[in-house]
Length: 142
Image (cartoon, rainbow, N blue to C red; front, side):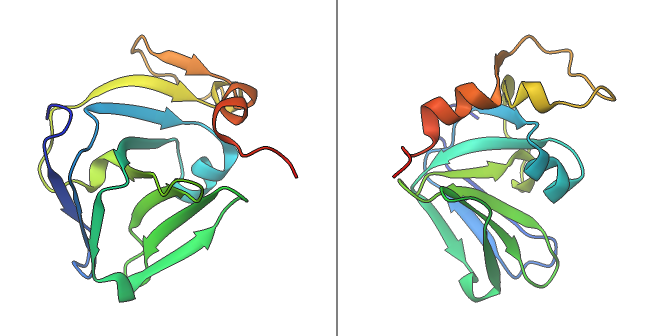
């Protein structure tokens, strides 16, 4: 999948489907403790911008996981659907959510300082610590 090719996917039970107008072709890994607790390992996600359409929204449950972000999942089957930034509405969807396997490349890891010792990725990626991520994306404190 090249940047800007449309993509779509659905949860395990089919109650929720998502279509993305302009997903990135890049996959990033988040090693933060919340992502690892949420999915049992790092979150491998695709940045999808704000042009995301959700069908079956009545089956989506949203959890405010931090002051700046939300996590969405299917309330029937538990499939992780998205990580969404509150400030700009930007979505990051799990790479495995897409129905067809798009042509993606793994190029970034965040919260690398929280990555546990029991796994490592071999890819050469851009790596950012939690402090670097907060400096870029977290809203300023009141």
